[in-house]
Length: 382
Ligand SMILES: NC(=O)c1ccc[n+]([C@@H]2O[C@H](COP(=O)([O-])OP(=O)(O)OC[C@H]3O[C@@H](n4cnc5c(N)ncnc54)[C@H](OP(=O)(O)O)[C@@H]3O)[C@@H](O)[C@H]2O)c1
Image (cartoon, rainbow, N blue to C red; front, top):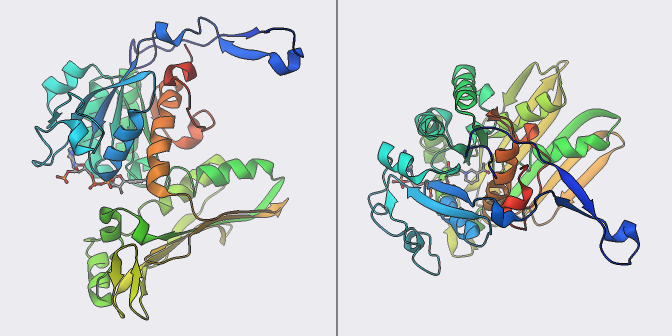
């Protein structure tokens, strides 16, 4: 059975209802796909592009899934190139897949349906990598934060990606926990229960000591405050990337007349004593992490407010408050684990992306997000 990124053509799904045994038909009706034998559908061939902290987690999750097969791995790090993928991601066994640098030969040979991409946060950096994957006929799912809603970064690059993906019959998606889910997709879904909305406020507070090292570096953990400010102003540390993308995605989903997005200056959170958490020690007067706030403006007022705090020792939670009719107050405590959830969202998105029409998409454009617990092929519209 063909699927997108295989024959580069969409095939619509059919369902049939099967009733089993003597139980109440309401209880026993099962919806199964016509020709539901997943075994008749070829395994989804997956290429890994970027085998860092997140790429490694994604590989370990993919190895637990049925219905797909990792067929290649690319990374730029000389320490990883030439090694077995299983060793690099700390899997239980060698996988017989050698990590390679990017090359046309490899991209052609692997014949992948989907590329999982996890190299960088910025559109201009990932653009050439993503275009190569598209031109080799692959659907792309990337953790790149700016790709989650690239239209607010560079409309020209975004529409070029969209054109290219359409021409090659594949779909491109940027996603992850944040941006991609917690501060955009989830509030969008919650808004479905509202008749009116006056304000949406989302706050995410995470303990940086629980997160990977690249993340801790990105938020300046351990730096003296002056160095933090200097590095932020020179772009040598970035803080969290994605508040703008999340606001734009919510505004577009709700068709708000967004006048602008205001990002407040990034504020360091300073240790007022020695703070030690999970092996991370920050001395008094040094940076524990940071706080970032951004607003989406409608009719001159803040309509959407996103607050992101990440620091060592934080009491973790996620909160979504919709001031509307009805009012919605959702609190997730502790906050959703970012790295575990990002790996999940990326893998769970594989069938949604294959099922989507070709082009550059965002989470609000795909089927309702959900876990893919069964054979991944069972979620395909074939
Ligand atoms: N949306 C979300 O919720 C979300 C969640 C988690 C992560 N992310 C983002 O995902 C990205 C990856 O995260 P990470 O923690 O895995 O970072 P990481 O540990 O630094 O891994 C990135 C890997 O990609 C490699 N790489 C960099 N440029 C490359 C290129 N041009 N071609 C091939 N490989 C390249 C790196 O090699 P070198 O080490 O040699 O550079 C490294 O091995 C980051 O930008 C992160 O912010 C987003």
